[in-house]
Structure formats: structure tokens, C-alpha cells
Length: 396
Image 1 (cartoon, rainbow, N blue to C red):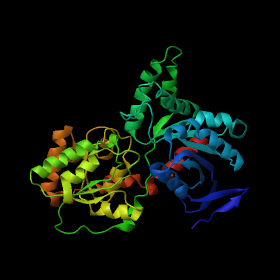
Image 2: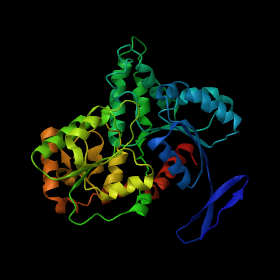
Image 3: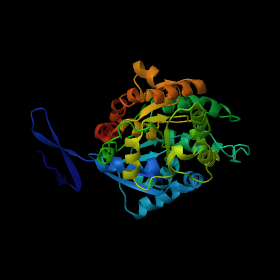
Image 4: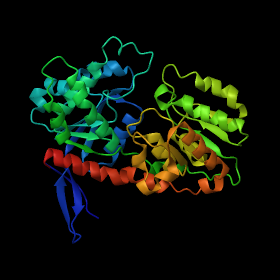
């Protein structure tokens, strides 16, 4: 096995050639800039840092006050970049970071340093909650402009799914066209030219450590493992369950996921309408407990109004849960086209029909085999892909 060594202050990563001989490649110093170091953002950053062949450090801030993070996070990260003596061969910012501002504040240190931006989500097409006053007051465009400026300032732009890339690029002309003059329509073409898809890496293999066997002959268990928020469409989810319960179908429900701020009232109402069918309700205390619930579950109906990738869906699929997915957003990209008819539905009636069939044919549902579709998102596959993509940006 090839051994690494330190050369000129850099750690070299040993690579094996076709003849089995070892040679050294200087590891790059990559700094991830993440103003929202929580949830899937935090797991992504730490996951890549732990598995990259390069030296990856994460410069992040706690995941709270998202608007303030997009306004001021780059200022704080720039100060810390200086104070902590960071140097980098490549900067990797996320969509929550104002990369243009960060580069301006570190121009004496970062001038000439290649920079990329990774879009977990974007503020051009993310749906706003109805109780947020900013859209009506015309203040919502600032966050979208941060995304635009970051993409323009970056040497490369990465999106976590083909749907996300098409959604963002498709929205740019209309966004720019809404301004009174100097609409910079060439900006959209410039961003498109340096954009590509780099799927979200997930620690899927870690879920295997907590695998539990499904109880033979158990009542079908339906899973909700998304955030308890409006954009995940909980009203339609519970409406379908109430309808099927009214038909006399036998099933249980587990409600996992984070609840930030005010959660939709339908979650409280569900306790009354579904009663003892709900076997668990609330956030799993740790990833091990979360994983065990995934392994126990049978069916994962999804009703989200928006989704740029769908981490919770991929995790469920990996653990053998049968997905029931809308034929829109990022979801069709997770299923081979020839299998779309088995797992994708159209409209509310399609959701109810597919969910009913999955409950009634539970033995068939439990052998649907969606795990193989999710395995490609494990870091074992994607960390080398990230390394190669970032090496290309840096000309390494």
C-alpha cells in the first residue's frame, strides 16, 4: 500500500499507477465557506472534508438567522479567514455565502485563488412562506442577487441536481429582465458556461451500522422524514392518509424531521385524526435512532412543493423504503426512467392510487428494490468525483 509523506509543508496523497507503482500528487488546501453550518449543509461539509484526498478545512457559522447569514456571513468569514491564517489552493463557498463580498474583503490574501460555489438551494426559485413580509415589500430580491453575484464571481458553479441547475439557469433571464436598465443579460450565459451538476454527497454507508430487521407480517409503516414546514407539503400528505384511513386500510405512521419556528397546524391536527396509527412523532435524538426508523419503514410518500435534491428521500430509499414520488422537481432524477411508472405519481389522485396499492400489496412493496438507485450518492463514490471536479477548477 502506498504511504503519504509531507513535502514542502503539503501532504502528498499516494496514488497507484496501472503498473501498481506509487507516485505522489500534492494535496490541495481547500477551504469550504459555509455560513449555515447545520443540517444537510453541515453534514455535506464535514462529509467531504473527512473523505477527500485533499486537505479540506471548513470555515463555518452556526445555522441560524438565515437572512443575516446571507447578508453578513461573508464579512465574519473573511475576518476569521485572516485571523486564523488560512491559505488555500481553492475556495469552495455555498449558496449561503456572498462569495463576491468575501473575495473583496480578502483580496490581498485570496487574489488569484480559484473559487467555486456549490448550490444546495437558491433564492431565485425557492418558494417563500405566505407569512413572510419581504416579498410584498420588495425586499426578497437581495438574496437572489447574492446568489447571482456569487455565481458571477466564481470560477465554477456546481448544482446538486440536474433539475436544480435547469431551474436556476432558467430563472436568471426573467430575474435580470425585471430591473429598470443595465440588465446584464450576458450574465446568465456566463454563469451557464461554467455550471455543471455535482450531486450531493451523503454518508449512506453509515446508515448500515444501525440496520434493524423489519418485523415479518407487521402492519405497513408509512414514513415522513422531512422538515415540518410548509414547503414539504404536509397538508396533502395528511389528506391522503386521512382518505385511506377512512377506506379502512390498515397502516401505521412515523413522523420524523426537524421543526424550525412555527410548524404547520396540520401536524397537531394529525394527532387527532390519525390517533394510535402514529407510532412515533418528533425529531429523532441522534442519527442512529433516525436510521433505525428508516430501516423499519415501508413506504415513503412525498408531497413536497419544492425540492432541489431530496436528501431525506435518498436516505429512505437506501434503507429499503419504497418511495412514492411526484413526477416533478428533482425526484424523477433519482429513479431510472424505465422505472418511473413504479415510483412516480401525477397529481393528488395519483398519489392516493399509488399509496393505496403500496399498502394493499405490502409484500411486493417491501421488495421494490429502490436502494440501488440511491447508492451512487454515497461519499465512497462522490468524494473522488468532487476531488476531480475541484482539481479541474484549480488546474491541479
